[in-house]
Picture 1 (cartoon, rainbow, N blue to C red):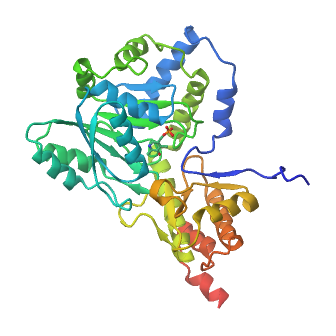
Picture 2: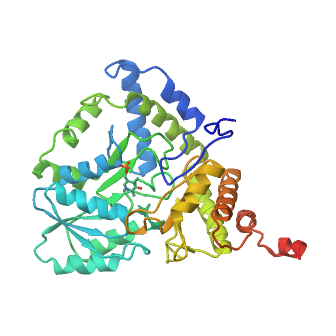
Picture 3: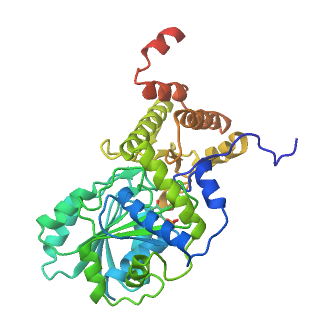
Length: 400
Ligand SMILES: *Cc1c(COP(=O)(O)O)cnc(C)c1O
């Protein structure tokens, strides 16, 4: 047998990109259509309407042909002016990257220090805003689900903190890894600009990104002075009103997006969110059984989307990932930034079922053994027990 033959499906257990369901693949594989013709106009109208149900907004959602990073930049260049102060919170690697991007394009970001194990501290944001009597800070930018650590933050609490401080800053939220996996309510939570991507909870390949806008954000863009052309909301909104885009959109991905929205609404968003929470709880049960810590140290902030598992001192997380790939044909997420080789990340989002989750947990348990990492056995049983909600007593009695 050739080394390159790996029977069975590859387990793409990353917190993005995620596995694309066949029904979406088929839609994407259909022939590319004319993006200035009537068939495409109908598609545009449908996806622009449908995507609002995912963001829970009655306002416009912009769709770019880019990765999530492009929509980060779009949010900033449309709503802000050169030299504007921006308040950010260091939840982990992605918050740090967004901050670097802001500095590179000529903003003055201030990153409130975090420990990469806890959620956004809304009180700290409120306190900083109260100090800013001159209202130099024009936007507060936070990551909803920090994909480097597996910590989810309370976005509504950040809104309340801004309002309680009586501060006019815009609120921007990165939903790249939470959209369609974790409850999000754009209008109700008062977010001004939300940033999304296609390759995580939406289950599409990478290549689409999103900005959901409030009225206040659209007004801010009318007077903001950052240089922008490709990312300009105004041109996009104008073309979208006529059912088109100002340049060639990612036509085939939009064909897939129509199916993604259909599938999410068929299952029901609440059921989708509950499925993710169950998978996360079962994964944590396995991690606890193995005897490891999660990177998230706040029991109220565990991510439904991914679990970052800390390896004991002196143990290489990448060695576990290498064995998972070689022996189990499974990709796990690597540690990012200061967590390089310290954690591996288990993605449990998107097109995901209980048997797939159990295959993932069992594969990791096997990889721990192959890598020679000391651990307690029985993580897979602990995950099954968590899924069935029955605890371990019966199984322990049988084994005794
Ligand atoms: C994946 C991710 C990004 C970056 O998205 P790209 O599509 O890689 O550009 C940004 N923020 C978060 C929270 C992410 O998970």
